Length: 315
Image 1 (tube, one colour):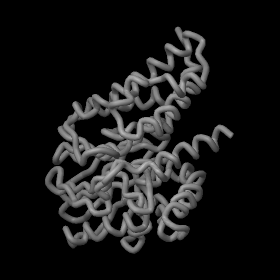
Image 2 (tube, helix red, strand yellow):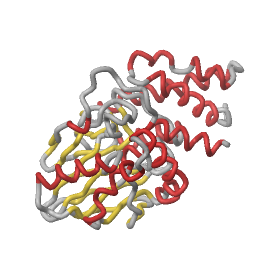
Image 3 (cartoon, one colour):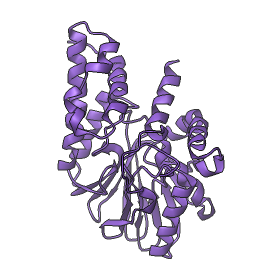
């Protein structure tokens, strides 16, 4: 049952319907933003998936070298991936040689089907394949229902062909991307991409801005990884959700405050004998006015954090 709840939480984070914000600018129509030379981001809309937004809710994009292109997260549906591929082809005639998943959530992954004919090297965390094997069918079915019932529209992942356990370098010709894998944090399959040429960090959902973070891994692990990322020499970061770029490490401040508040409030509740039901309704309420989709996710984050921290050694 616990595993089923975890999978459902990850699914709801990406494809729950009915939470769209008023008067949105659809991400499917968003132009590319060049955040640094050769580094392009298609910003996602700050919503959950709907038929109207085609699950184009994550920040996705690509990096161009002298010889090849690397896609970083191919998008949330077959249509989202196809639009990204068309934008790449409009920018460069270089081959799409790499496709990198920053983690297992479907809003970052299901667009991969659109890149099948490019036969890219598919780079992912060493735990990605197992996580997708457990969750992928559930994710696809859920999104297909939202998009009208056609699983082809939902898209699919391409199987990883290069698994990253600790780190790996990807050479695009005159531009080497450093890919790093982490322990459980936002999920159990998080990795980042660092472009030393422009000092740009692509953080995936290890970083949220505007949209409330969603905990599907380890709260303490996430805070640890965030500290490691802050030590990198990056000057800008591409978050998984929010603006196309933020200054680094200043861009970590809001998320770090939220995660720290979540941990502090849960520990205080445990110390005072509070239960898991109280966690869902009282923890991190001071953050409510700071995040979009707060009511949809904070209670779930609090329950997940409570389950993790109740086994923590209080000493």
